[in-house]
Image (cartoon, rainbow, N blue to C red):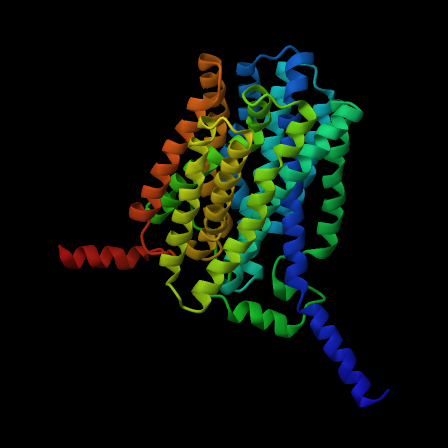
Length: 449
């Protein structure tokens, strides 16, 4: 074998190996896509379930919200588990659990069984985002953080966008029970792929090149994955102002965002008079727009930071503010007579929430203490998903009381304004949290005394 031929083989192997982190990103993207497809099935099937199982709007609001109760409450334990025992176990077990729960919903017989299975779905899905935030911190250099965060979170819009027309078609062609069974089975195939492809740290992967490991680790301010460093206790994180700002801000974003995967189909049918099949196509448009815009926003913010156009703090706040200003359009949507304008405003609003989300999911990696990214992400997502826990109930109550969605959407816009003020004034400099050494702190106090 000639030396030139050996050089070509080595170069090809190196090039192939340097893409390993993007294979991991692809699996992260797929996990979130499956996550949202599975949680969206109920939303698409809601009009049928209300009629067939004799469930009123208030009861459906509780069923939709039940997912968020368990989902929100288990974010911190799921984040702790992923940081402590590894994201391979945390995310792998989670996808298997929620896939089985989705399949089981095809066996539901009424309000109680739907409520219980929706709670079970939330238990499994709780680990998805905290795990992905931790994987991003371990597997990617800091300059790619918002790009990857925007990429994997964009899958939530793809999942919803694909799910809506696909599930509507499946329900129309077959049956809602068969649809739950078929959609739920997809995640089990992902678990198999995850087991064989993912490794906890870049150094542990059998097919990665040393050059890619160096590219990743040399580009990280904090090299997460050192097993000798324990994650920070979740309650200690509450001492830091930025953690509160992250939690409050994300709550306002999620309250608005989850309207698009819970009540939007019913809104389009009830208030805008769309037939079921047309609704399935139109409801996907805001999610498709959001998916594209989020990836662009994540990439653009990373470029601005890398090229030092703005500081990390200024970049995060700029994109969060722009996104939330766009999200305000949800409050104007019900006041137009034109269906086209309503859908356009909803597309802008959803895209705004995704611009903000590209930064929201980068923030845990920006501020978390070493080996604590998943638990910071879990804490942030716990509070944020209270928006999902109460949002469908509040919306259902407003619709039940007024007979339409107008004031429910206006209320969402008011929360968006609070989110803007929060990120501008409560959130401080975006930088890693350094836990103050107890002995140092004690000495400082003693010297001041």
